[in-house]
Amino acid sequence: MIHYFVKDNSDYRWNDIELVAWYEHENVLYTDKNEYKSSFDRVEYLRLFSNKEKNSSVSFKADFGRNTAIGHHARTPEELHKVEIDNASWTGPGSRQVTKKEYLEARGKLFETYKAYMFLNFESINIEN
Image (cartoon, rainbow, N blue to C red; front, side, top):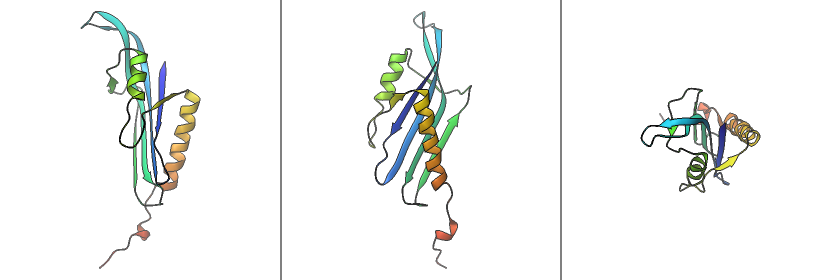
């Protein structure tokens, strides 16, 4: 099962969108407690932070793959959900769990926003000699 989360703290000045998808491996043996629990691998992480003024300031990060080495300390889906939902920052509230359809829609909007701000127009920079 894949667990999808979206964090959108955009406002009138900034686009601030973060998406993360966690793949759950069920019945993993944890030898420290000799228990079978879940394990989670992050299969996709996308973040866009940009000023809504064109060519002003853009940061885009994409990290994805079927066999990523980024795991999560959670051992149950409930624990994963709590950590993701509680991941508030100074920019606003934490993530919300969404369906696959909602996640894909949010990802599409993120890339549309990125394409609108994607490249810097070097002609817009005033260079003083």
